Length: 479
Image 1 (tube, rainbow, N blue to C red):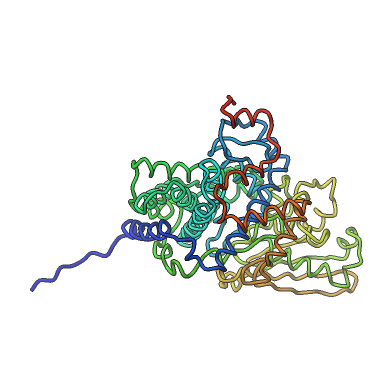
Image 2 (cartoon, helix red, strand yellow; image 1 turned 180 degrees about the vertical axis):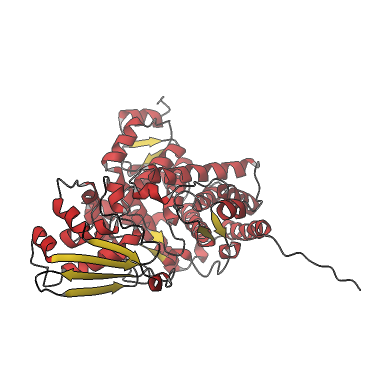
């Protein structure tokens, strides 16, 4: 008897099949079946996202952006912006505010920022349609898991920045769930989002170009568009990710979309930031804080610290090694410099958002110390990716003070290395915003989210006092 030869599924078929399975899980996610530790983690991620967005909204750049941006009528809040507006506009502005200070949480296995891609679109849509808190929580969690799994599945080519490509899928999934779409349409939304990636170059971030923030705004709007296209029934799941995220932008392993689905929660592998800089700079900055406490340096003035340091050698993995620029001419450029993060931590005891904007004229010792930092890849440290993101700092001191060598397997705040407790995160965010009562309000909102009948009023309250223009827009006036 002749046997029938079954051809193995190609990458496009595999992407379509695993996208279907992932969408079926996301559409069927029941909040009461979510384990309590995962619920708690979502609450912390939401707290962090809201607070960091509010901090970003206060920056000079975000204020300037809001001044020139048309605000159409709508019920979605521009967090901290004194405005309510149309869903897409709020999602875009909130997404750019969230990432502009480099303080948004991330996932080390996703190799980027699942919440940053997902939450602005989902929260704007939820406020606009008056979604219940439980539905919003489901959408946020499902969107996070979808985005993180697409991040795990995608291996971007060297030089491609992770903002605005694989994470669009999370925004689409979360918005599709808010719209009540069945699993096939959720799959269509996710697949369509995979066909809407940004191909941004990492050097734009190193150069301090704020287009990097705009990539995240584009992701939020594209996620909303993908969900609406699916709702209209004009798109379907065809395995697009294998072509866009795979063939064009890198490699794509579709099996990562469903491996451990429902048991290995990606949100549990996340990290929170305590430094306003790229996460790849964090272990070196953490080690600089340890060095700062050394008795040989701890009592010195900033100028004396610069004089006491001969060289600071940073050995790290291949992802962090390119971030070795010792001079920058913008805040974003500073945030993507290991020498900057090390110098700021050693001199100031923190890497604060405002420090990144300091000029060499204003902070000569900061730039002088940064010039003493060298960054190189150690293949042995690269081999420990992605489980670890290790760094080694060797300080050679002057005046007979000797040398100090320090190592870290992860940045502080990683789920596997000095993870933030709820109290520690709230305290950090209170310091960031300078407003403990506001953070207490955010904690209550995040913790009580699933019990809300309509999440809109609580979110709109975070816009702050609305301007006359915004109030007119919300009531149907023209913008």
